[in-house]
Image (cartoon, rainbow, N blue to C red; front, side):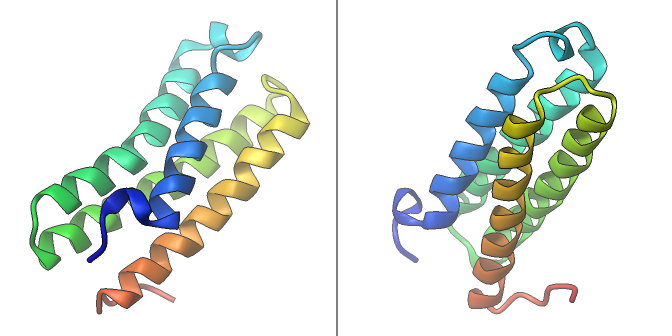
Length: 121
């Protein structure tokens, strides 16, 4: 496999993590600690799990960690939708992150398929 930093999936994961984390630093969501923390944890988990799987240097460990990253990407979207429904975040910014999260899910599924992993349809 190529270097992790060269993968589009890795780049998008880092962009999503940064954007989602920044979103939680603005009012009023920054005062809603539990939801802000969940958004932060889910977003940071995506690239962190990708890096962990890559560093473990086995296909099976990489696949396992990519599946965890995929779960975190879906979790992030859920939390962002909730924050949007509660009007705790700016709509335009949040929709951009949600759209990038959807793109990231597709990239992760594609990467998993390219590694020969079975993914749910």
